[in-house]
Image (cartoon, rainbow, N blue to C red; front, side):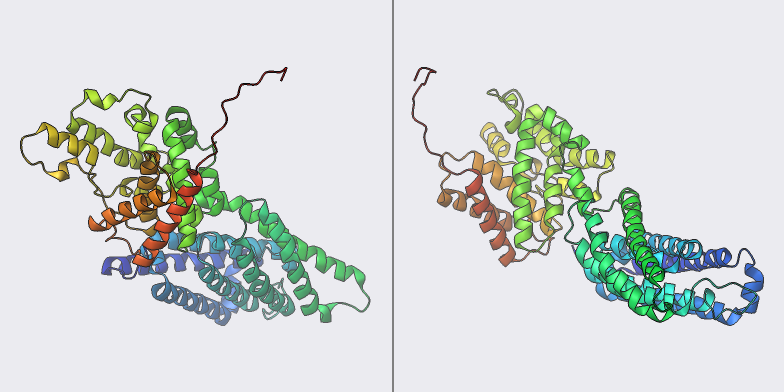
Length: 491
C-alpha cells in the first residue's frame, strides 16, 4: 500500500537517518580526498578551505533535496530507514569506486552507470533517474573543486575540466538510458546486453566532448577513448552483477532476478513443497499464473504477484496430509472435531509466515501468507459444528485470524486462491459456471469487508474477476472424448 502520511516519529527518525547518512557521506568525500592527495589531506584542506566548504555545503543541499523529493513523492522510502541507508551506502560505494578508477586508470573508464543501474532495480524509474541526476551533480562538484586543475600546486590534480563535463553528460544520457533499458531485462545475463547498448552513446559522448583535446590525426587517442568508454560500461555491469546479490540479501530487495530465483524449482521451500505436498504445489502454480495475469491487468507488479502466490500456502508443509489437495480417498478430518480441524486449517496461514521468516525470505511473502484468507469463516467446519450443536455458535471461533489484505496483490491472491480451489470442485466447468462461481466469491468477500484495508477499486475488482474467469477457462477447458479403441502393433 502506498504510504500517504508519516507519523511524527517516522518523520523524526527519517530526518535523523538522513543526518547520519550525510555525515558519513562527508566522511566518504574526505576519504576520496585522502586518496587524491596521497595522504597529505590536512595541508590540502587548509590551502583549499573555500573549495572544501563549497563541496560540503553542496553535498548537504543535495541531501536536503533528496529528502524533500521522497517526502513529496514517495513517503514509503522515508518510513523505512533501512531503505535510506541502502541508497546512501550505494552512493558511497559508487563515489569511492569511480574515484579510484579515475585516479589509477582513467577518468573515461569510471563505472559511471553502476549507480543508475543498481538503483533502477529497487526503485521506480522516476526515482532512479532523480537519484542519478543528484549523484552526477555530487560527483561533478567534487571533481571540479577538489580533484581538478583548479586545485593549485603542489597538490596533484587527476581530472581535467573536459573529463568532468563529459562524465556528467555520460551520466545523464547513458545513465538514464540504462535505467529505461534495465526495466525490460528479466535475467542477470541480460545486463551484459545492456552494457553493449550503453557503449554506443558513451563512446559518442566521450569522443565528441573530448575531440578538442585530441591531437590532429592521432588515431591512438581515438582508440584509447573508445577502449576506456567500453571499460566504463563493462566495469559498471560487472560491479552491478557483483553488488546486486549482496544488496538483495542485506536489504531483502525484491528484484526481478531474485523473484525468479525464489520461484524456481531449485528454491529450498519450493522444492520441499513439491516433494512433501504435491497437491498444494500444483495449486500454488495455478494461483501464481492467475495472480500474474491479474496483476498485469491492473498495472501491479506481475513478478511480485507470481512469486508471492508461490509461497502463500507454504504453511501447509507442517501438516500436508490434513489438506484436501494432498489427501487420497480418505479424509483425516473425519476423526477430528470441527474445532480441532479449524485450528489445523487456519494455522497454515501463521505457520507459513513463520516458515518464510525462518528461511529469511521477503517480509512481503509473510504478509501474503497471513492475509490471503483474511478473516473469512471456514464454512465447511462451521457448518459441521452447527449440525453437532443445539444452539448458535460464534462464527469468529471458526474463522481465520486475519488480518485482511493490505495490498492489491494480497487481494488478488485471496481471490485467485479461492477461485482455483472452488473451480476444481465444479462438475460443470463451462465458462458460464466458472464466471458465476468467481463472481460469487468476490461478492462474498466484499460483503464480509475483506478489501476495506487495501486500496483496490471496484473497477479493479471487476477486472480481476474477469481475468480470473478467462484464465480458469483456459486451465479447465473442455476436452474431446477419446474413442475407446485398443490398438496393437499388428493393426
